[in-house]
Image (cartoon, rainbow, N blue to C red; front, side, top):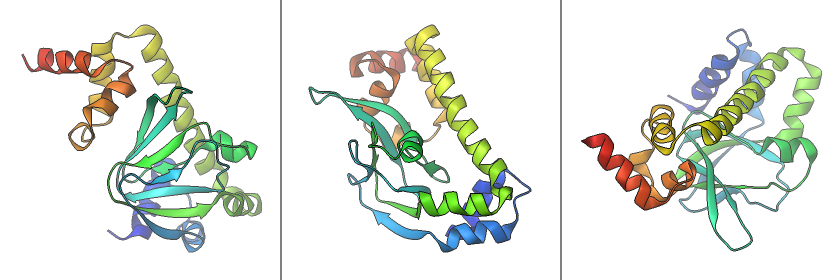
Length: 194
């Protein structure tokens, strides 16, 4: 499937009524870019001007504290958007980085140009609203999970949501995402196999 078809399918999953002609307008302002494993789409502390659509690859959203410890916030999988939304909306440095965990391909586009497209055509608003809604829902579910669920439940939810991710990344990233040590993750995995 080509990049435009993938973008159309993803956008229509948020809003099936959005016309193909609008999606093509967005596609025409995109730049297809290869990102090598270990490179970053967004760096914490930098003001980003872009968002992207993940055509093929896997990314990790993560924070780094003042001692250099990193904490995985989430993962950017194929056919999903990559964004530090609050940083873009407030035109401020991002609090987190987005790093490629494998060689990846993205469609990168200027956020300001997309905002201008939305201002000119209100048919973009349902998509934009549902995209933000999905980010908010994920954030709320993650907060609930950390406050109310045990590590085993969080791990099961991770496996359900990110079905194929675990086999493609370092287990340290999974442990970090779950808020547990790699040793605890090893015990959880062993217990679930038995």
